[in-house]
Image 1 (spheres, rainbow, N blue to C red):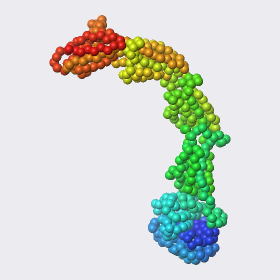
Image 2 (image 1 turned 45 degrees about the vertical axis):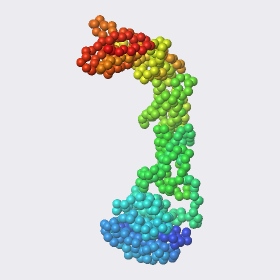
Image 3 (image 1 turned 30 degrees about the vertical axis):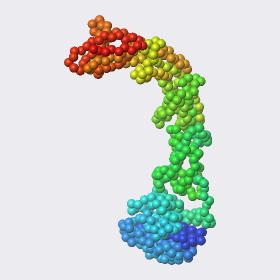
Length: 545
């Protein structure tokens, strides 16, 4: 604790000596007077070291330096509101501060955040330049957040700075209070013994600027970059996205401070951060410290390779925007939202890529070293079949969404069925198919046909299917249901039902031939049977009496 006190007083003394002890730059020393200050360093209580250090350092402070002293934990045990401005900031207070420290009791808790806040308010930090030096041998014990306080004072103050000296703190304890200084542009000094404390004070004094001229303002202080490997191979064809997050005293991420792509530049407030670089399915991060007046250009090593892929239906063709590129990132999952062309970064090692176009598929396995870039055309090897249906050969095309297609392999399986390859709806459907023999199965309402065809790589095959069918329109006054049967009975004397409809009218497509429609009426009128014929490519209208 006393080492911290000496550090704070040294801060104030050095600043005043260096900057001419301007009256507007006033300082309050916040002294930890909690019970833990009875702990010893090298056999001597920390409170005694603090008292002696304060007295020594204050002797070198100019008489016109405006200093004050605030203490906490010096009057009561276990009270978080035991905070007092013992010596108000003014010139010539060195002797009063030394005397107050010599007679002070060390009893209570450590409400360091509230003490710093009250010191800032006493200095009118929202109106004038203000400096607070905290000397503490412990961490916050009164349910407050020093890091959040630092951010608040920095944002609200005109020119507010807090320095923190941690006397006898562990590294982990130091992280919990260092952010108070870092978030206000101040310094954190950690001292484990008298010598370390004095060394820290010398460092602070040397670090003070030699003149009052402000450092030139940088146009930007942050310009991140990324490479594919430590050898420096740049991922120039690849997009790299950078995110920067502030970190707390423990190094954990807090608020996002920056988000942009490779080549972007920005300005970050001094403090601790984590930089995250992401490209493709590769993401790496590294810590970053921004110092006032200094530029940082971190370069993150992705330890990855780059794939530049084009999906082609056939050799010599252009990339097909319907070709899906599926990347199986090793141990990271599968990316499927890529079509036609893909530029991506993958982890060094093995990556499997599959391209699907219609019913065609091709798979490539890539072995990439860190920093390696591979450009590759993946050829699926398909031809294109364009299918259309006509009511009759050379007649009118069926131009209806009710048209449905199933493409099956021509060769039958052991059970006599054919394996379905793909399907589609409507006229002029285009299918990308591997080379081979196929059958197009087409249905238009109650009419259906099969048409065999062949496919060759890089060639277009037009498949024209004649349905040998016509359109029939049936109406019946008071009708409720129509059932259409083939006129010819089978060997059991039964007629095969072709289709049906409801209401007093219906229209459908039927293969050429003879039929009977059985009409059921909404009234008690008996069913009626009406014979009719359908001719390919013609329309037949049937009125049921």
